[in-house]
Length: 198
Length: 386
Figure 1: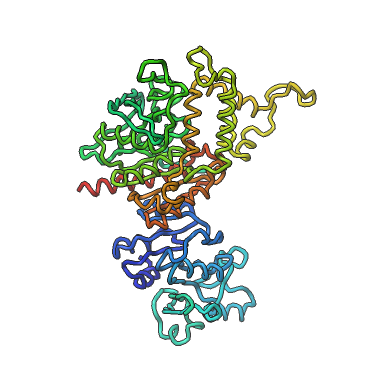
Figure 2: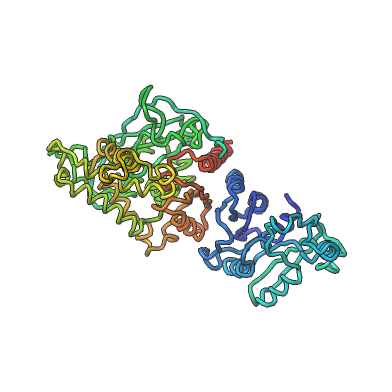
């Protein structure tokens, strides 16, 4: 399994009810089912991903995240997961609020726009960064809501979300001393486990 | 659009069979049939453990002839030939497929055209009101007869999807998978309104004769054709009709006015006329009523979550973007009830401009979704056997 999914899988308890937003090919859910007996649901908008999930026996609901989650009941899930999708939805703040309404906790991962490579690229070239972990150009990138770790944490403070856990890794999904010391400068991807306002 | 991996072959020539249930059968409306007959077809072979059976539930005007042909050279194959056959989504190399004509139908099962038990002529308009639940229970008797205890899948589109849903609720231990296509948990006022227009067209045709047309050797052709025309428009979509017919003129000069016939007019008339020759008016009235009355949540305080609580099956919902008879949102109602009930459920939304009729068409993504799901269903049956 992809190393980022492994990190998430370790954060999910065996009896949890899981919803994976932007579940892709359903790898996380398939692993959770086989190795932890967790029967979750995936959500995706890509037809090919839907078929792949069905092929794996993963529950999958075709739905565009930008259409919101209003039809889902409060507390429907123990954990709502969204991996590297936050930066490409139209209303990330609203979506986060919804995730913590329908789920008791959520796990969110996203790339850091404050990474030194981004800063250096913008500083040196005066152009939107095209770097290893964000390879698209400004006009064709799906990442319309890029932010830094600090930006995200400010939003969490504003909304009074609890940051229960945070992992910061490099582009290899491994932990690095520098990334741990100065995450907003040296971290590439962050994993946040959030809880509702205390 | 690339072709589906599930294009497949044909089941060939099939012969319908009959099942006679000799015991009294109490209907939901309270009436009792002294027994009933179902006409059905099967495709593929039942395996030694009887775990590979699939039930096909038909929609408003469907019947038992779902796949193959009745004789070489038949112009049209069964109504769901695109999905049933060797290598097709409902793969007859893997599954034992059963298709039947429901009670109240006019293709050979007990219905308005059958003789009354007291031999005082045919039922006609006196055939009791039938329900989706009645169909499900009668289908279960057929399954018993065929030695099928548990279905690998019960599958249906539209009104057939309602039967698949009901199966999962009424026989939770006999359905492993319920595949509910282009369906709704109950009709809306608009749906009922269209059905009422169709029924009114039939019953107000003087040739309907209060439903006793056959005794007089007449048939409400005009009313039935009208009913089919209004129904047919609701099965298509505005953009689909636009692409297919546009404003093409079949005959006449549009500048002269009165004698002009648009292609779409000609098409609808043809559809209506063909239907009125093939379908029984009393059955049409009966089937649309069953549709109107279907409401599985009614006995559960209008709570669909409570209604589906009994179900144990895994569910696959499929809906189509341009379907305005049972739009995507209606399938989502079922999906969310199942989610809240913690059932296994998946939902695929197929992009199609063919409206409600999409469920009968060989749309590549649709075939792939259905075929992929059923391939895994079969793999699980095989895995359980070892």
